[in-house]
Image (cartoon, rainbow, N blue to C red; front, side, top):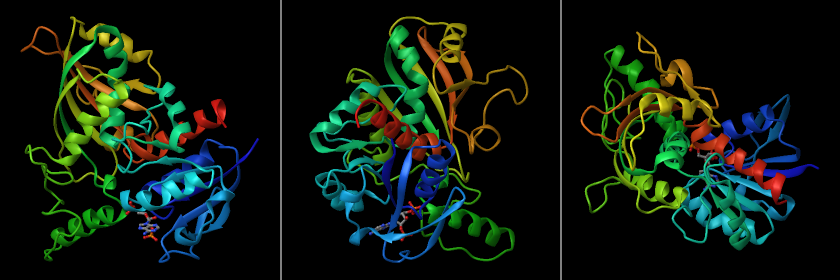
Length: 338
Ligand code: A2P
């Protein structure tokens, strides 16, 4: 059986990765429709060895497709995802638009595949935030074994999470600064090249940023457990692809570092790279970028807490953090439901 699939935001950073991954994983596609704004309509994109022509989202008839992969921003999803669902298309939405809606499932296939079934209510499944996805993939086996009371996390997030304009901005700022030319930040409130910004998304009343609160709301929803407490600090760094996270856990019962390592080594979607020597850990650029797994290293017992475990978690934010996770959801959808 084959399916007709629309990629909404096909010209963007995540949309492009979606098309690449659909091709690499041999997703059973009959017809692929790349959709974007009217600015890109008529543009040619590569899909495997074929060329496909971008169509204007505003003119598209969603009754032609069974699956829509949306990654064109929350406003676009707010307007078009319900229309697509009403036309009979199942939407896998990579934006934050529906994630916190109790009636919309929020899914990471390694963690809560059973939640997909909830798509039947509204025809929409939400894909979590990139920082949440890689963290919950690594934490689920520990959660299942010993429970998690509290998570302290600091992220080191790549600019590709913001989109293609931010990728260009980091490249341009880097080159301008190295050549002594002035810069004027657009994608971020301050210079991102050679800098580190402790702000991702807008500030909230409680002093956290929205990206930080997304990690709180989403982790509790995906784990189906509001008793898991989180304290995140989300930071943008001048890296193109790959988010890194320093995670400090307080488990409910004691677990040792070797036990954590053994659990993670047999868990799906995870590669443990943890050697206590120079370079014996995963990094965004060297290990994660362009790859599918979530990489975990620096596994150790927290010397300041009797039930503390520290981890370093790295993944390609555009792939596992967005495009790949959406496509894994679509794969479960066609296997079990469509
Ligand atoms: P376009 O290239 O035509 O602007 P990124 O996240 O990398 O910035 O990409 C955003 C994606 O969302 C692009 O494919 C962009 O298309 C698409 N997009 C943005 N606004 C709209 C819109 N109003 N209608 C359809 N697609 C949109």
